[in-house]
Image 1 (tube, one colour):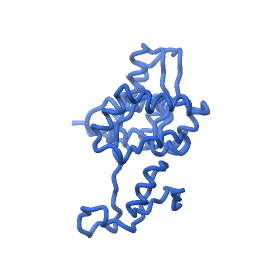
Image 2 (cartoon, helix red, strand yellow):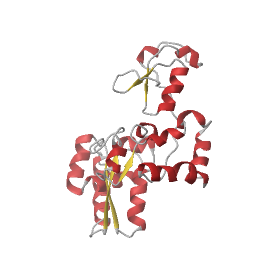
Image 3 (cartoon, rainbow, N blue to C red):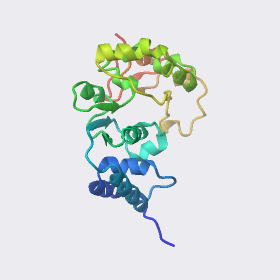
Length: 238
């Protein structure tokens, strides 16, 4: 019986150095069960072989914070999308997936796409609202009662007129897909020994990290949830 080596960051980068970051991440995506160094190495080698040859189009996808570890947990579709583009174009399209904030982060991925530094990006719609204010037209986190209702809207034909066409016209962005994740509050360590929070009023006066959207910030102000930007600054509601 052979012992498999657990995959760590150093091992992953060693495989990526040989087969390329995109091939390694795409290979890891197709694996089931715990990620091991040997398994990812074999998958990366096969993926690199399948992606061999000269592509007609090469696209850079900037991924804010996403890497092979949290994408296995979140399953939000970015790597699947990149893989399907390559597969369905018979290799004419190649996507270089650049995650872990290496080329852009939550606040500037949209800017770098508009500037042509990357061709596609993946980041929170709310964080992207800082550079593309039309994202504020919908209060993503609070107006939808469930993920199912979000999904219904985003893939309904009416989303073309209400969201996608204005984003193209005003910000030169094509909205491709979303995995419809609702926002939640994650309690800090000082809540570890406290009773379970059951009402928003029990959190009145606390400080909570907030994204770049104006509507979400205003909603938190109205609920006395003390919105604080992730750079540590209290935000104005003006």
